[in-house]
Image 1 (tube, rainbow, N blue to C red):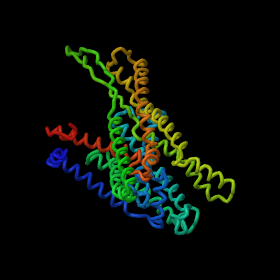
Image 2 (spheres, rainbow, N blue to C red):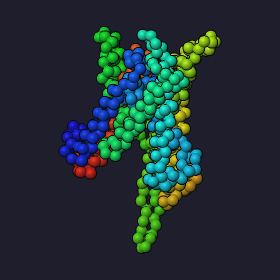
Image 3 (tube, one colour):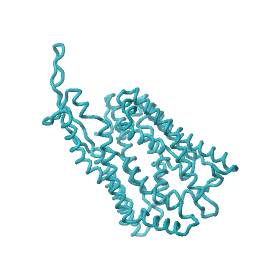
Image 4 (cartoon, rainbow, N blue to C red):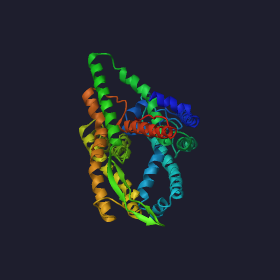
Length: 438
């Protein structure tokens, strides 16, 4: 692999792509260190690290949220907008027509996604700022001061704060698109990947700072083994496919014969990626967010209800993780079927004169592919569910409460690394060099 890296740097245009990607990541890390005014930095870091939803948002912002930087929202509003557009495309006829118009239609859908990102970023920024402005700080006051859209004295600073956060999100989206066009890999994924990798040294220092007793050393070794096994499982599941053979009928045109070849359709075991985890976490932490808002209520029964709700929906409880597991499995099936319907594989095969041996084209092909996809998705769904609750059970087993990498971050790191290596592999193979993957 080291020789492959050296070969990649020997090629001028490939070296330029790699250096451009690294340069964009440096700019991203520089912007992520620019804080917004009026925030209690140390208290905010502790609060974000102990909150599951904010921890996930901090992941997508490249640790920008815990510093409440200009890019505190990260690319999460853009990801949310992309998911919304994917769900609405088969429902809204106009969007469905655009998706069938080739590259021009996809460009218009991408433009609508950018427009949708702006109000989502404003809304998410307002929600985060409002939450921080109402959360008490251990040193007195709140985590964020001078915020309020309904106060004349704080109106202008609050609007400037929201616009700065929205502009930071759009800046990251622009940087991501530059990486996609001129660098290596998917730009948005590379940005998230860079944020996770940048946070590893601090997380590793905190993990190793628990002492040097034999019990602690054994817990760390067991924790490392669990992490390695998890990474191997992610690679196997992400690379796992079921190959459905497809035969193209022979056709004769202008005295020449076409078709007659056999290929296959690769149905992935995990077609949904990390999206089910994002859906499930967003829903699971919603009761806890409501409990935090109601905890400061002047009505006694609301405070009691908030305390009971927060205790029942704590991520450290067994019932929370069981419900979390079931929701991840359900969302995996849901999102996989949405993606499968958008691909329109049976219609494409019938239009190209292709068929699956032993299966009639059209409706029967759709039923057959749905059955196969349902069976193999069970493995991917159960795996994602185990990944979701893995931090809880790993902490119970090892006694290490601070996990280096959560389920979502592990999926991102491994997935982006594999995708980037494949792109470099393709570039090297085009120039007759031996690539990364043997």
